[in-house]
Image (cartoon, rainbow, N blue to C red; front, side, top):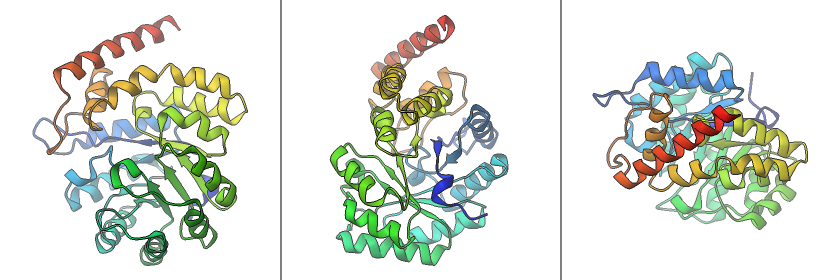
Length: 300
């Protein structure tokens, strides 16, 4: 069955790639993470994005990770990230993921040699034509230096080049404009935890969230409340996770997140170079937050 925009509703967890002590991919831990997410109510899985350390994996490892996720997902959407800088590399990665059984791909805007808005349109159109899988655009200007204009998003959605988009941007006015122009033609997914409830209240169909690796049920409840028009209640629920969000993003993702997951009993291992584990100060903060969250859960 071909994935459509209507299938992109709810929580899509951006999962880490767990590593064993010898630095290889820990596939058993990976499969356990996927099972945990889906059993908790997540709609789908997004492996191999920034949280999944795309640049640190070899081409064959990426395909193997996607294949393992698809195996465990048993029909739930698996939308691996494509973080390639150039078109040919992006096509190769996406074709690998299609062969591994992915439902679609989430492709970041081209960066380093970033083109104009017309270039972005041509890029995503060509990617969709070459790969033959549904495509989600991934916008994260703080990492790429590239933002998609609302008009660009609308043109891509109208001709079917993309069925959705992960928005990792704090530009709320542009988000509102994109929803106005393209909200009926594609699925907008929030990629910013602090804005998740607000994005949903403004029309986002769901989100792609890394911290859901640990707390999927909390994020699903935030989504339910925001979509039901109870924004104040959704924000109050979301604020319970503010200390977690603040600490796991103190240093480059996913180093602190993996450390926190290990504290929470979710085997994630460490990170690969050029990333390193969190500093001693961040480790201490993560440990304190984890203890506080555990106390809150026990009290509840």
